[in-house]
Length: 242
Ligand SMILES: [Zn+2]
Ligand SMILES: [Zn+2]
Image 1 (cartoon, protein in one colour):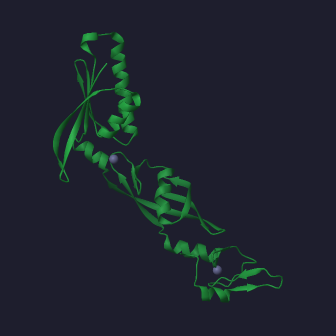
Image 2: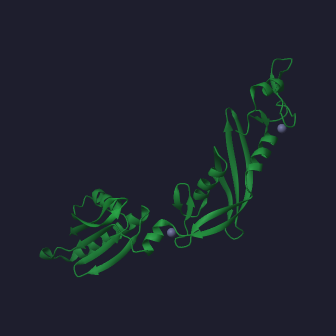
Image 3: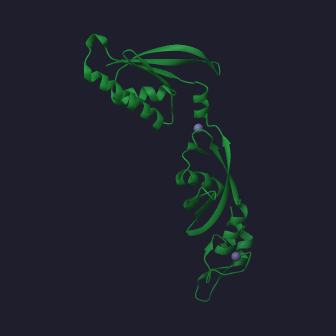
C-alpha cells in the first residue's frame, strides 16, 4: 500500500555498488539505503510522511452516555488504553499500536504505531485530539426499555428449611449477577419474594451457561413473548430450589 512502486520504476531506483551491495534510492527524495533506513521502496522519512498525511489529527469517539463505554469495531468496551488500541489500529491498517499517553482532561492521545513490511519495520508516533459523541449502547438501551430474556426464580425449598440455605441463596444471587454483568449483560430487575428472589437477566444463553458451570440443575420453562424476524422468541424461566 504505502511503500510499494511498480516494477519498472523500481529497476531505475536500485543500483549495485562496487562491492555488490544493493543500494535503493527513494523515489520521492532520492535518499539512499546506505545512509537511511528504508521500508519497502521508500526511505523511512518519506514513508512516515506519507502515512501521517492519511491520518486525521482529531478523531471522534462514540461513547455511551449511560455506562460510559466506547464503541470499537469489536463492540462496546471500557474507555481505557486497551479499547483505544482497538480504535486506533483501525485508523492505521496493519499496524500494532501502543498508547503512550492518554489525557482525559485535555482530550489527547499519544500513540506509537509499528508497521512491518517484509523485513523492514517502521515506527512513528502521533498525537491525536478527540471529541466525544454521546450515544446509547444497545445494552443500556435494552435496560432502559425493560428488556429481559430470562427469569431466575431462586427459592428455598420450603419443605426442607434450614438457616444456611438463606446464605446460599444470597451467594448465588451475587455470583449470578456478577457472571451476567461480566459477560456483557445486565440485570433488568430483582424482586424479593417470600422464599427467595426473582432475577430478570438480559441474556438467556449466559444464564444457562452459569447454571452449567456451577452444575446446578434448575427446572426450565419457556414462555412465548413475540416474534423477531419471523421467528418465535421465548423467555426462559429457571426455577432453582435450594
Ligand atoms: Zn524519501
Ligand atoms: Zn451503555
